[in-house]
Image (cartoon, rainbow, N blue to C red):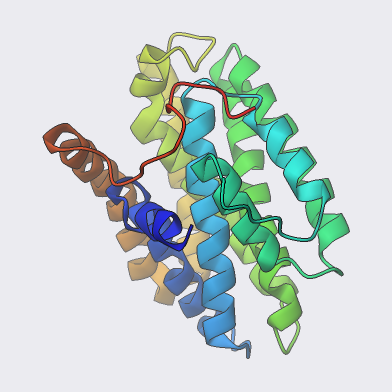
Length: 259
């Protein structure tokens, strides 16, 4: 299992997820919040690998993966098994290691809310509804990462939480702009994006992104490097996958259901 988890972390398609913890630590420093940096990094790494793998599974058409994960997470204690049969199950069990008992109920509520937003996003039939759901998905994803690390923060982090939610929402819209054509081609959208739709999405990104940058100009380079990662890493991962076998060797075929 250790080797399997290491392979997931080293897979090029999850590279930008693995970089997120260090960026959040820089934001924690910016807001002058004390924490155990190593533990915070481990918690965030487990969380964002979980997000990357689950996002992959859902994009592969397994939208019910969310229900299965909620069932796994309902039992707080990790349940590792030598017969661990999928990367989704493995990253979920690893994440449970870092969820404290106090955070578990509220995180479960937020995860259910996140799953509902993901399902609603897939049912959106026009760009405004789609943007609204993507904003919610990004904000909730970031809020969950804050809830995970909050027990280890040694002073008030409410300002950090709001900041992370705002950045998460913009980041989710940027991902959408990059992937909108591919998502339509894969049948993940209920509408055909037009030039106007791309313009609406771009305006939302610029408006909200500039608002954050103007409030926190010292973090501008951090935002910019994250955007570059989001644009570059999927391309590099696609090239790596086309030149050789994937690093992740699930014991079940990737096209099969994890249920």
